[in-house]
Image (cartoon, rainbow, N blue to C red; front, side, top):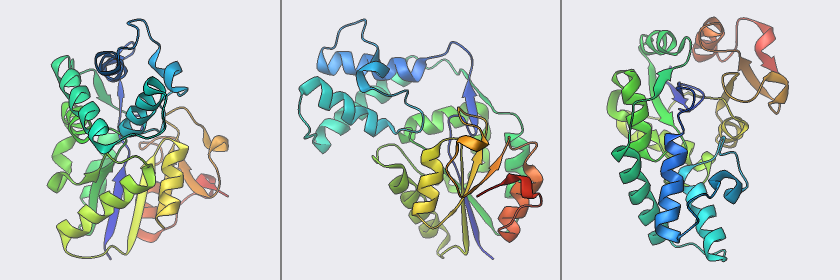
Length: 244
C-alpha cells in the first residue's frame, strides 16, 4: 500500500492571529505599486471575492484584468506580480500564524505510518506557503518539501502538480490519494483528480455547506480516528463523517 496525503494550508493546517491581514496587505500593496490602484482600495471588493479557497495567481490575474480592463493576462505579468508580492510579504513578515487545534498531533500520527507520503496543496505562492508552515514548525514533517502551489491558477491543477512531484520524488504511483482542506474548492479538486476528499470544519464552512460526496471531520483532533482509518482503509470509523 502506498498512500499520499495532501494538505491545504490556510484554514486547514494553520490560522493567522486575529487582526493579522499580512497576506492580504501584501497583495494590496503589490496591486497599488504595479497598477496604480488607490491607496484606500478594498482589494477583496476589487476582486469581488473573500479570497477563501482561491489561489494567489487567480487573485493576481483578477487584479490585472480589472485594473487593465482586459481579459488577456500574460505569464510575464503573473510572474512579475508573484515576485513583487513575495518580496513585500517577506519584507513585512511578522510570524502571525499558529497551527490549528490537533494538526501537529495528526501529522505526527500520519507520518508514522510507513507507507504514507505527505505534501502541501495550497493556493499560496510556494515561498509564502512554506514561510507560513515553517513558522509553525510543521515543515519538519514534510520530507522533500513536496507540494503544489499558487503559481498555478486552478486548485485542481495545483493538486495534480502535488501528486506529480510526490510520484517523481518516490519513484512510484500511489494506491490511494487523500486531500484534506477547509474549502469547497478542496473537495472539488480532490474529486477532479480521483482522490478522496476530506473536508475539515476549521475554515468558513460546516458539514452541511460542503457539496456531496465527501468525508467531513470537525478538526484533526476530534476527527483523528476517522482520518487514520480513511488513510489505511479508505473508510472512516464513524458513519457520522460521511457526507453523501
